[in-house]
Image 1 (tube, helix red, strand yellow):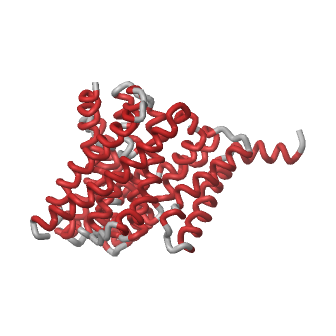
Image 2 (cartoon, one colour; image 1 turned 30 degrees about the horizontal axis):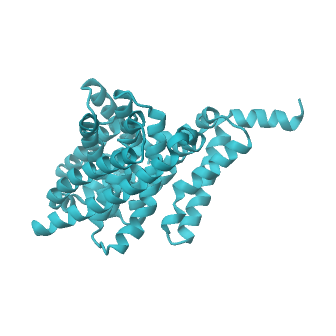
Image 3 (cartoon, chains in turn orange, yellow; image 1 turned 90 degrees about the vertical axis):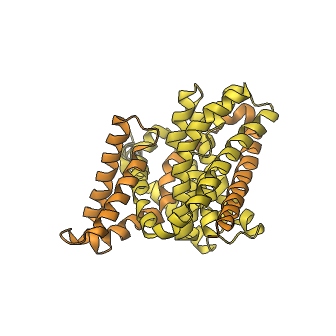
Length: 123
Length: 238
């Protein structure tokens, strides 16, 4: 598990360095995700010689363990919002209406476009 | 100084207390969510944050002191984002087959999220300065705050709107798309990741791994596209 966590951190670190060095518009961890994806492809093209935790499913379990509790990771930032609801003061109702309308329409528009194109290309 | 007070001064200054409060609130909220069969209204992010907020309010703890402890949890967002590569890799065949639908849904969804957000707010008389902070609301917080700052808006307001959008999207997605009879979990996941970033993605992973995988992809792609579209949309408004 430690090896898997180390690999996740190494990917994130490399991602941050790349994102900052090349002033990319995407956050470092997203670059790190692409790097890990590349490593996984490479691992399965050339198996053998790698430490067991990277090939026996430990890496997968560690990553999925983190993702299973993704909700937890938003609690610290979310708690900050509770104390700053005052910034909504003057336009609270209008902003709430905008969020509800826009989120519902975005969900519906995205889902129907996805399904329509999937049907159109036959997948 | 009384003994009780000295103990409180000690506890309130160590990361231990606030880390424990964060985890306890989440464990309680997650148990409630599990006990209700992952009912949308039992969203663990929503319930954990008001519990933590209540504790901070009652103990009059400044958010900065709380964050000293909670930052260890917050930090894990980075490695968790990297870990999205794992389900993405495992479902790579499903994902590559859906490239066309994903790109089309990305362009339409991102435009609708942006246009209807600022459009509704403008109709309701919200001033332009606040529209800048509202525009990137569907994008993951760090990117959204960056977009707002670059355009001269208030990133704190953006952070609040982003988190509220995430919670709203995570709560709305299941009842809304059930009512419409949508059964394609690739499409459902992609929609909630696009409209409600990481909090929506967390919801998608509760429902199915395929939905979660597509949500993660949508979150990443939309961060990129929104960064390009927001300045354009705001220029059109003026």
